[in-house]
Image 1 (tube, rainbow over the protein chains, first blue to last red):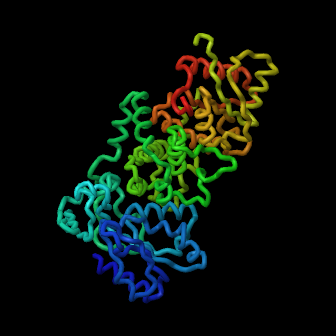
Image 2 (image 1 turned 90 degrees about the vertical axis):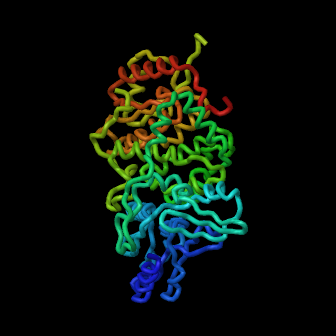
Image 3 (image 1 turned 135 degrees about the horizontal axis):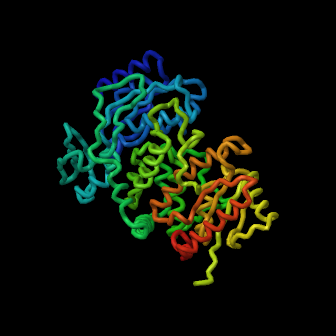
Length: 321
Length: 139
């Protein structure tokens, strides 16, 4: 599959169909492939794709690649299911034009959560990674372990139902089926059964660990405002301490800012140094958006994002009669 | 505690609900003196951050009111607001905030009577659940 990816990328670049292909290459860390910009056919052999390709290459359309597409250049981008949803969101939000991108879909088997691997290796450094048919092997000094990929995949990936790009120009390899390994709503259903007091206590307990490093925001493909609300200090709406109400307000408002925009890639959870279950609120919001507005993020790039749209006769049960 | 009066922030849109409050005033309709009013150009102006900030600063409740659907001075401000609140409200309940703390209503400029009723209802709701403790800074 990787060979096919390289060949296709080579052809696109050689035919001058695209000026650049964004994908992944093996980086200095065995468990996290590095995003790479390939601009000549000779370089295409650097491309890889496996479960270490967690970074979302679509985000470059809100960053470095934005300038390039503005100049009318065409760019190829290799996308997993969640990356494709981000891309569809950027298209819907008019961040990039469809004619400027060539979408190369790859079938995703889920992304490795390095923290889950670390608990199994006892924190020993992994120097080599390989995968084969649902098994993952990690090697290092005095380290040679093989385990079920499912045990070390990111929890967001286990609940994922969008493994393949929906909209693509090329698809490489065989599409994965969309049945999740675990119910994506199970955690919120369970949480909702608790009494409000208990929910509040759990939230307090979880978010009091937050150190406000903003790694979740920085890594989020949907967070691309030039100036984030937490960085505005005139007027300063949000407290900057890690006092629980400040922290919770940050997380609640961030969740609302990505309401109908979160693609549930789980990048925030993987980036969180405190191991917070950040997707709990995201999933709650996504389900609410889906139930109320019939909108699922990043499926149809022609559809207006939920929070920028409305219907006149919408359900308004929460408004005083 | 028996004499405790809640402090409620009412965020009212300039064109309907604020005028509704005005009408209640000039008509000398009685309602509890528990509300503090903030006038905004449109309910679409209300950022959820305003609501969070008011709860954090110790308001016992927040009421947001705008024009009835279809009556927005800016045509669609209240529709956009409605989508925001439709997500904010269940999210706040999800994290354990009492549903009574944050309420929404539509009040037109002609509904002075209704304005008083809504204020009475919100005040009674909040009196029933008592002073805000969750999400209040330093509580």
